[in-house]
Amino acid sequence: MENMLGLLRIRILRGVNLAVRDTRSSDPYVKIRMGKQKLKTRVVKKNVNPEWNEDLTLSVDDPNLPVKLTVYDRDRFSHDDKMGDAEFDIKPFIEACKLHMTDIPNGTIITRLMPSRQNCLAEESCIMWTNGKVVQDICARLKNVECGEVELQLQWIDLPGSKGI
Image (cartoon, helix red, strand yellow):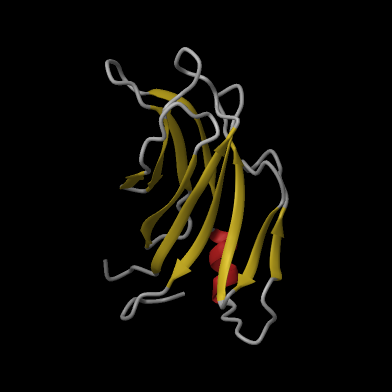
């Protein structure tokens, strides 16, 4: 842990138009993986537009590792069904955090990331200065599934005693 840069707080906001995996709906939850770390949200029953508003926190020691997000449908009697996945790069976000900005107006856009074949963005993603913090809003289009997006927000937490960025 001595190489830890800090914590990445991922607020899983909501799922949009997720795939139906049960008879009429799904019981979705999100699993986040980065390196060996795995975290997951609670299950939202019978909802293909779930609101999680849940914070998952990863410790970051290698900014080159992508964050992998997978949505599952909770099944009581069988394996949980996969409902798509997405992967995103945290390097642009960490680069923006390294700028150590302070005297800029709230709501200033630091970087804009455009959707491309190389990423899972469903729409433009802005890294912004909001309430004294760098945040990034991401709307991730799920792959390997017929439909669905997950909206999330990244926030950086510097740790006392960590190497910092």
